[in-house]
Length: 130
Image 1: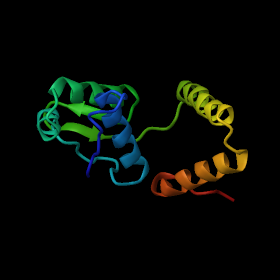
Image 2: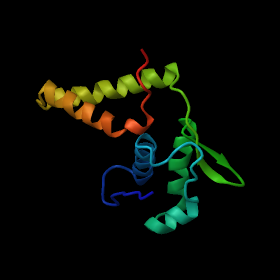
Image 3: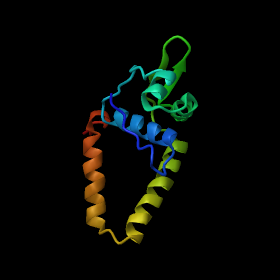
Image 4: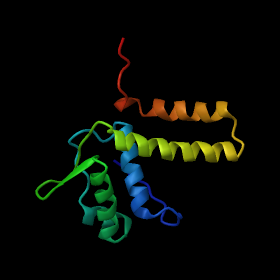
């Protein structure tokens, strides 16, 4: 797995790390049971403080996407979206869609972009049931 972060971005590095790992899970690059790099090793790779990586991993743990074990480190764990997650996700999606509308993006373009992104995450999408 290759993670890309922009050290000059306004987005905090821990948030970028968290986001890239979530994307790797959605894309199927990381699957249930996948091991993440040790915090010190990942920090050394980026030349950042290991507490920054710890913060990203802790966010992922709180969100139920990884578990942290003393012996094995950070391991991907997939969970079902619960009602609090769905409510939070809906609120964040509303804000992003409002930004698109406020900037004048046509609804068709927004929907096409959403569909394209969802399709790229096809590895973990539930299959339609009859």
